[in-house]
Length: 633
Image (cartoon, rainbow, N blue to C red; front, top):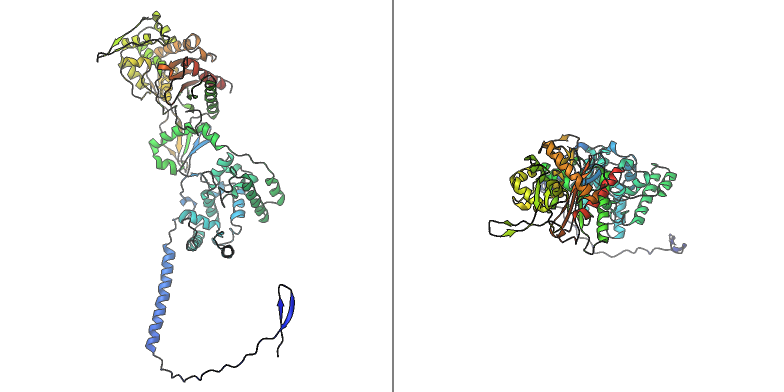
């Protein structure tokens, strides 16, 4: 008898074990089976059926394999994702982006070398060795998923993630994983490892609306990816697993834990030393403030977006990755934003109405190029652009156009007009009795004093002399496209216009009678660097140099002794105030030899700004604050 020993794994003891003896069982005797002779026809038919099934299976498998949809990507140049249109200021610095997906494409040789190291270490350590599919990782993930009872791990390589992003759905099924693996293998044979990795680093979503490492670097750190340090790179490389869960903006502690994991993996792969990993982990991180950037440039970007859509269409703008160079001066833009905000804060302290809104536009006095544009107090809370889209009554800032038309007709600034009560009979039998803002009349008044002190009666009687047609023609040639009523109310600025239109019209006074059309874009290139056609600024003569000089001289007196005295302090400046009926709008448009700036203040609901809220008191101080800040740069 054979003695067996059994070991108990729990108690680690052994004991003898004797297996039971096998006993013979009684079986009924088998009946003899009579063998039939082999039928060769049956064998042939059976083999044909089996062969057909195998052939059909192989054919179906091959057909399914080759029918899998894979883009015709033979090199990185064939990769055509949705690409961000980048917006640059006049010095070539990126200030904003226009996109359907925020993505800026880089070739592999343009990518910071730290970035591929970090992402490979974190996502696919054997990337350079496998053929698109890491069998061991897939098997390990499969076992872990069986143990956990759900699909918690995918075992996907970087190549598989590329195929998933470009070709497949996001559903988590084993059938999709099979397709993904096959396509990854095919893609690995079609492209170089560098091209696949470059596509991955441009395609991957990294949170906060950023696709790819370049967009993510600018979103999180406000810099190009080429300037990222090791700590910043490792933080980005930790995001693909779950950009929302590991967001450094919302969950910094979790993001830092992922950063530590990436740094350790990079050290394990000998991309960096353990000391470099520790130093990077202890390095402080400084994040960009996307909201503040939008508040700084959002209104201007919206303005040029409308211009670009008119010429290129929305699809090209959002998909083709244009590079747009603009006229914006970032330093002036920051000063303009601060001047508007401070002006609104001052008005809020001195007023019991909710605070009003304000807008500011500043142009190059010689070329008409838009150097700064602010469409409101806060873009993120109110993106409506009051500088270019809002149409409000300009009030007395329209009067210089009437005076220019009069001087073109040979009328002298010394002409005297009686500032006396006036009643105008309308064709329908009604009457209109205009009045000065002060509710006073000043008797015989020269045109010079009439403009300097903004006398409404003088302007209306002057318009009666010139007629409305010359003024309307001049306004059109000076860039005002908003509808203007051919009535005497034109003298009071009763027809709504935009701040950008009205400010642009003043270029005829800064350019000796020539109109410089306000422009915001100096050049557009496609994603390959080809220059696209774009019409820049244009200039044409509208009035004579003499008429322009006369008006400009009077506008200088508006600041020195007239309604614009709150704007005094800028040498060689000239400008005009504007206040509409019931103090609903306050305007000031002024200039020196360098800058032409317009300011509007008012409520979106067209409510009154309050008693005494004239353009000289509420708009001119904002203008002065901005212009003084620019003289210090």
